[in-house]
Amino acid sequence: QVQLVESGGGLVQAGGSLRLSCAASGHTFSTDGLGWFRQAPGKEREFVATITWSSGSTYYVDSVKGRFTISRDNAKNTVSLQMNSLKPEDTAVYYCAAQIKGTGRYDFWGQGTQVTVSS
Image (tube, rainbow, N blue to C red; front, side, top):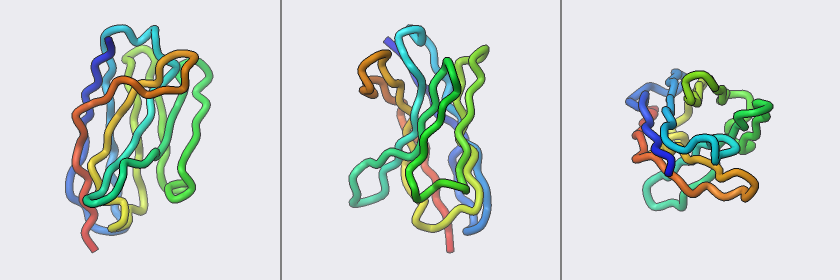
């Protein structure tokens, strides 16, 4: 089992910045890395970004490229998402998820943190 706890959400004006963090504990050795997903009201959950523990390889959804940066701290088993130039359409509940090693699946999820961007 892997436990994930997100922090750092809040309310910000358009153009502002927020930094989300996800702390992983438990069987983190069974994971390839962590990813961030988000779900806006009335919409399906969507992938935002992911990073691997070993190489630090990253991947982003097109809509956040150049604005969001995902990073990791292997010593602390934490992953952060720096969000700059926020837009109202970034408003959503953001979830951290652990990718199970060798499967590509995200089987463990945090409780989510609300990000609200006002126009």
